[in-house]
Amino acid sequence: MENFNLTKSEIATLRIEHKLAKKSSAKLAYRINAIILLGSGWSIANVSDALLLDDATLRSYVKKFKDGGVKLLLSDNYNGRQSFLSDEQKIELTEHLENKLYRTSIEIIKYVNSNYKVKYSTRGMCNLLHDLGFTYKKPKLIPSGFNYAEQEEFIEYFNEFIKNKKDTESVVFYDSSHPQYQSTTDYGWIKKGKEMLLKNHGNRGRVNISGGVDIDTGQVIVDFPEKVNSETTIATLKNIELCYPKSEVIHVVLDNARVHKSKIVRKFLLTSKINLVFLPPYSPNLNIMERIWRLLRSKTLTNSFRETYTEFRNVIMKFFNNTIIEKNDDWIQPLIEANFQEFEGNVII
Image 1 (tube, rainbow, N blue to C red):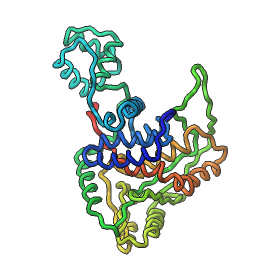
Image 2: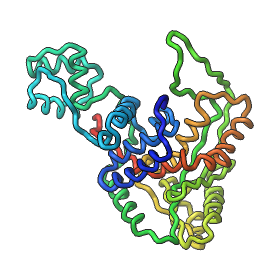
Image 3: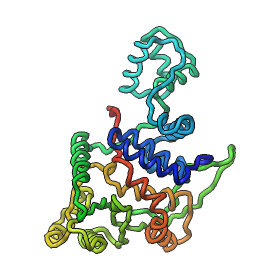
Image 4: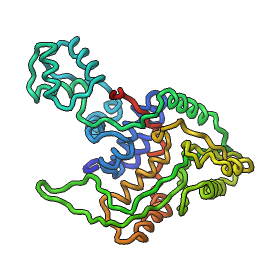
């Protein structure tokens, strides 16, 4: 983020604060994680994509940190401006807005006028909404079949498992991704009234990637199979197994894709050190390897054009074979240190 850079000493201190915050609140730990990334050279757009937080929220974290350090950053106190609603009415309005999504402040002005006989200007209503802790952003898309209870149960189980894990046990989050050979756009600073143009082409193709990330070391282990099937899944699992000669058990956390439960995969596991741990259905937010795919897109694939498919593939392979090894401390460690991203909020029905 422009004009916001942390020293190595500040980052080290923040990581200590992050570990302490994780014990009490995942929400507060996420704030510190965002500050570390933004202060390490990440852009607002990249951090927003990696941590699933909107730009306005990230900017408010930076302002709080600049104004009062970690103490203010972790504070949830709001200094409200004077308004026409009573404290009781503000509480009622807050509860209403937490359960109903309005697209414009005009709609909320009409609601307040109708229910409380109080008139607000557009600016006055925006100020009130900010004071009540609201910001203007899109709802998050969630898988229609995900289950809150199952996700909470998994998080509780996994956190307890990590506390009691033996030194001879390793944990890898596993997934597959298929970047398409197409140009993709992302936010960037463009002069007002001007356009920036990104070339694209009609060629089709994709790069298949399978692999995992070690949640202790940040090591990323990937293969580039022609197809993702039972045979290539076993090949990638064998590759992961070779990376842990001293481990007695390698716990590989992954989704419920049919290929992960095939007969030949189950047969392979009978003589392997690998133990598959399945995430709850529809839970990409719990798979830490998803953060690596987002990192790949934000650092390598967006706002760039590759003339040939070979060049496109080589850029991806270089990212995994060289770049993230060199950038482990700056890029990977903050991602694996972050808590699970939980879906918090009310569902629009």
